[in-house]
Image (cartoon, rainbow, N blue to C red; front, top):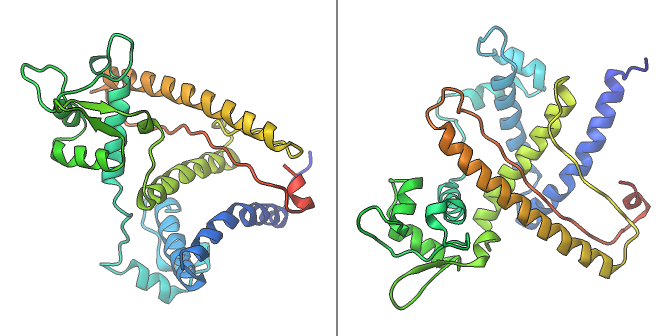
Length: 281
């Protein structure tokens, strides 16, 4: 059986990394984040991942072990592991909260009309009847419904009539997020996509779903027709998974094994081939 040497593995992996990092480097340069900042971030990440993933016998790795694993200088490791050096992710609370509210509004039966569409909601209601306030409290009791309503209006995801009833807009299913929200979800979505790829490369167990189709000799009209087809099927599939996951989440509530998270996504990309290398899948 043919085996792959460590050097061959490193060569193939670095070749793949060169490809996957190109779009990231492009946006970093565009937004004024240069190599020195990325270099420091990579030091932090190498230390964090080595510390969290490569412990021996559940013991916290020593500075020397992290140096051996990562190649980061010991003085940098000591600095990065010093108290008070913890790095926090950007706050995505508002983005995830709005998304959860839209998801529940679009899928829970009590918030749908007789045609299965999101129903108009009064701001408040008596006797436990559906309302926007009740919907928000199913997701979080730590934020005022008025603040969420203002944010959804800002994003043009909801509209109000003269009586104050709140309507979910079609744009809510493909929201026009601001840059902060887009970068937040880019990090989460691409992280989980790469995590699935990493699992498949390192694990001998059941591979996680990670598939795509690729064609490189298509006309503009064909591309647009395929894009419309992809968006339509993706919307239907995501809605179906969302509805089923909501049902499971309710039935799994309180179970000791209800500790798992999932993310399923779809993406589309098209561009003109710029060189012969782009002919390769």
